[in-house]
Amino acid sequence: MKEYDIKDPSLAEQGLLRIEWAEREMPVLRLIRERFRKEKPLQGVRLGACLHVTSETANLMRTLREGGAEVALCASNPLSTQDDVAAALVEHYQIPVYAIKGEDEETYYQHIAAVLDHHPQVTMDDGADLVSTLHKSRRELLPDVIGGTEETTTGVIRLRALQAQGKLAYPIIAVNDADTKHLFDNRYGTGQSTIDGIIRATNVLLAGKTFVVCGYGWCSRGIAMRARGMGANVIVTEVDPLRALEAVMDGYRVMPMRQAAQVGDIFVSATGDLHVIDREHFERMKDGAIVANSGHFNVEINLEALGEMATEVKKVRPFVEQYTLADGRHIYVLGEGRLVNLAAAEGHPSAVMDMSFANQALSAEFIVCHHAELEKAVYPVPEEIDKNVALLKLQAMGIEIDELTEEQKKYLSSWESGT
Image 1 (cartoon, rainbow, N blue to C red):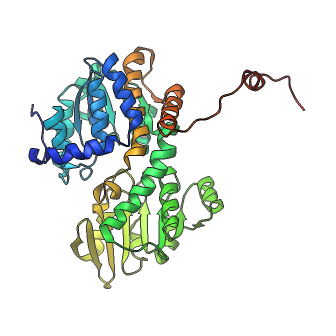
Image 2 (tube, rainbow, N blue to C red):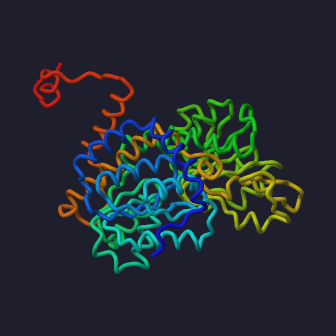
Image 3 (cartoon, rainbow, N blue to C red):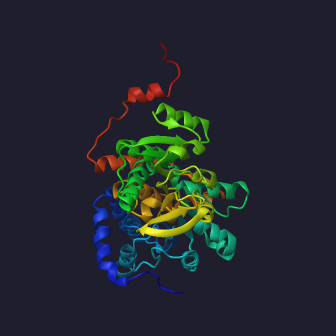
């Protein structure tokens, strides 16, 4: 087994500074780490993690290790690794990391296999590639796995499909569904970091542009909100009538994608589904249209169809590819159609990942303590963990809130009182 596979160990000092900078904005995880250091709730547990290898993830790995876990980490996307952070985790914290920014698909799955070679008892996934590989090709390891956690919407969708088929082999907590995750990480984190990725990659002015957001889940809500805040004219496309209605009530124009394709300047997909931006849409787009994806996988944009339509493809800026079509139009794809906020920028701000990764750490602790009581199913984050994370975050921000009086508690638990 290789001890690690990273780009360059000499980047470790730079990565350490980045990890320490992120920690300043992660007070909840820091408090959990202090408790874990004393109590060792994960003592001796082998934990395999497939996450975006960022400075925020590094602080989660430190927390898990302080709790006693034996951790191994790989990337959950070929473009989401910060190579200096990977080096710092290996050199300064002796955590096995298998991740290189820009790795090809073969290397990506070799790195997942390397983490599985550590024989994890708990999995921590972002997109369910680790869990999927475990269930498909490494089933001999399943008897030792007691549970897992899942970070993102796409992964939860895959896991629920696995459960529906009766094939899920162990309990998994859907961290994505915690209120302190999706209401903040998905909305505010994705909103800010997606805009950041687009601007870093292109340096375009958003004000006055027609900005098309595909979908209106929590991630897309955040993107639409931030694009409007930058002065863009936002259009939302949807397949769900309730979400479409909500987008209308929030003040956005809503229309089918084939119609939006004709007028949009910038397109961002964040749905978790296949070919949301497809051949028929490329055929209608204006010259100079910019296309990006903020969903977990690069399947949301039909790049194969776009490649077939193109007479030439060339890189014109870092993370910007120009597709020249037969009629002379140009369409620009950002970050190879992968997560633009991590491909072209640094991902979510540390302050919002603080809550998401606090949920991860506490859910891992819950799995270790309660796995014998759980069925082979996808579970929500326990309410007490969710509320505790929110309370700790408020305390770290210096914000106090009210508490119910005994009279109010009694009123809320009774039915006798009326008008």
